[in-house]
Structures are given as C-alpha cells and as structure tokens.
Amino acid sequence: MKPFASRIFLLATVYVLSGCGAQSPTSMPETAVPQVEPLATVPAAPPNVEDQASLIAGLQSVGADVEAGDSVIQDFFTPEGKIIKINGADVQVFEYKNADAMESEASQVAPDGSSVGTSMMMWVDAPHFFKAGRIIALYIGSNEMVLALLEKTMGMQFAGR
Image (cartoon, rainbow, N blue to C red; front, side, top):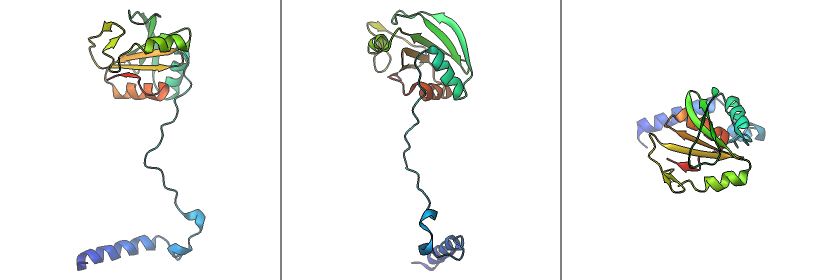
C-alpha cells in the first residue's frame, strides 16, 4: 500500500475502534449487533378501500386534502362518476354495485389507458387508472404527489402511463 493510503486506512480504523470504548469488537454482546435493513422494502399494504367513502377516508388518513366535487359521466364506464379533488387535482371515481362489475369494466381498459373497449381516447395529459374494492379511479395528470397518494390508498395503477 502507498504510505498516504495506509495512513488514511490506519486513521479510519482507529476512529472506528475508538467509538467502541474499552470493549473489543469480538467481545460485544450478541444483542448489540446492529440490525441491517433489507435493501428493498415491501411497500405497506394500502388501506381497505371498498367504495368512494373509504377512499376519501383512506386519502385523508395519509394526509391528503380531499373535497367532494360534481358528477361526471364517461361513456365507457356504466355508473355515473363523482369527482373528488385531491390536493386540488380532479380525480374521477366510479363506484359499482359489486367487485365483479367493476372488474368486468376494468378489464376493458388498455394497459396504456389509450382505449376502453372500443372507445379510443385523446387525453389532455397522462391517464392513470386505479381500482380497489368496488371502485375505479381515473386521474388525468402528472402531479407526483397525487399519484403517490392514490398508490398509497389504492395500490399501483392497473392501466395508464
């Protein structure tokens, strides 16, 4: 080793060992061994979202500012939707009578969100489709905070860009 590099190594070793006090590293009790966190952590499961009311409650529980808005109709979804504002951004929520009906319509959405069934879309911004319980939520936008809040409460989007 070069003299400069060996001095740095020696200083670093002395510094690390000086933090151990009078104990040598081999005499540390087993309970004092630091626990290592895994490199990749599994995200926490989203709250149990079943309908629009539980979605709003879930969003509020993770710190979102949520307001109820107007009704909305999309020709490609059967139920009339409701707009909720999440931190000021419009999100369309479509609530179905049961999960099977929701899944049936969700299966018609193209993976990139460019079409639903036979309807082709020209979105003004990136579409993001989420589903949970008996609802489909559609967010058209790019606000990372809104996307993160939807992912925390509904899980990952099932379609969109």
